[in-house]
Amino acid sequence: MRQIVLDTETTGLEASQGHRIIEIGCVELVNRKLTGNHYHQYINPQREIDQGAIEVHGITSEFLADKPLFEQVAAEFTEYIADAELIIHNAPFDLGFLNAELQRLDSSRVPLESVCTIIDTLVMARGKHPGQRNNLDALCQRYGVDNSQRDLHGALLDAEILADVYLAMTGGQTTFQLSDSGHDTPNGLRGGEQIRRVPAGRSPLPVICASKEELVAHEAQQEAIAAASGGRVIWRERTSG
Image (cartoon, rainbow, N blue to C red; front, side, top):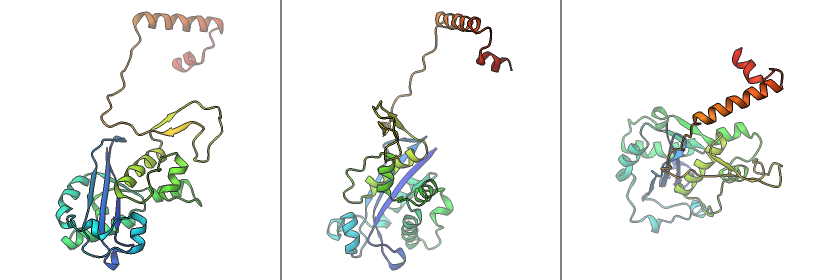
């Protein structure tokens, strides 16, 4: 299963008011593992950026002056996300901007949500944690995801963080460490639990089979347990039933 975790940064809040995309960041998950195959692109929006937006992401018109236009990267971007399930936090926002950009190039183009399956992690989080804050920073704290480098919003960094949050929200990759405390921590994990990103390209875990001698010893141990319990052993009752 191929999934793309996606985020954008923009010149403002409303695509309907002519605001444009200035950054796209995507990371790829295949069978719930980060592959290292990411997509990242800054884009020249050919318009000014609202000051409020600059305060959020820190990207200026001067920085974007020599970056490509959306029309120059559209084919590469759409090829990258083709046939993938898109994971987005507050999907209507990002999809609204992406669809607006694509329809500027081809007014007959159908919306991305008509051709891609969309998972909105904000909707998912509201369902799991009703009445609580469910922005990305709040979810990082709740699930123990490191967002210490997130001083400003950035599409690629936010996509990487969202991938970890999504995996945690859906029962994903965690590592458990012994702790002196067995109590739940404020982030919703038990003491010592941390989210761990699985390295890309990790070799499959080895499968070690029991030897003939070990199988014989195991059977002998089962016989001894059965004899000591008068034949009342649960696993044998279930197997025979």
